[in-house]
Length: 114
Length: 115
Image 1 (cartoon, rainbow over the protein chains, first blue to last red):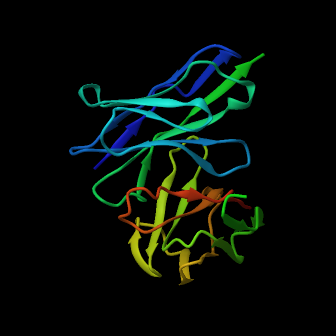
Image 2: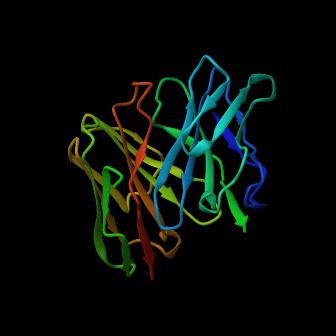
């Protein structure tokens, strides 16, 4: 069975600083990986996804993520954080060919200081 | 506007009540899902419907009863719930279960409190 670990429960950065959110997955075959963001009182919005090909994927809102098979990681990055990026971020993996049945990590809460 | 609408946004119910959560998607998708988001726990997949047929029940207690009358609507019927069932219930949809370029689209959820 697949699993996802987000080691950081809470991260605080200053506005304008760079950001990296960590995600490690466990899955026996080629994983399909996703990052979602959830603002308070809202559902989850897809930031980006990786299925195959280029291991550096670009998403919305200036986010990118890099798939590293050797490290079983799919870390999310942004070069300069904006106050509006404060939210909770979830990494997820889909196993097999059922792209909708996701296993989520516990989430990382991002706080942005002015 | 997410394309996936959930009602009500908030629901408080006693343990002996019966209530229903509603989800409607306007995206032309064929797969719909219920996820449960509890505090300090990862999102948990509860049920999956594909072309109105239930394809997955992730060991969910029978006090939760899903219904999918058509590909655009999904319900979650609740009865004799427990306080630990208090959570945010998220509905999601996707094109189907196998189309790669169609990830999940989530609604804003129903915040359920069981008293």
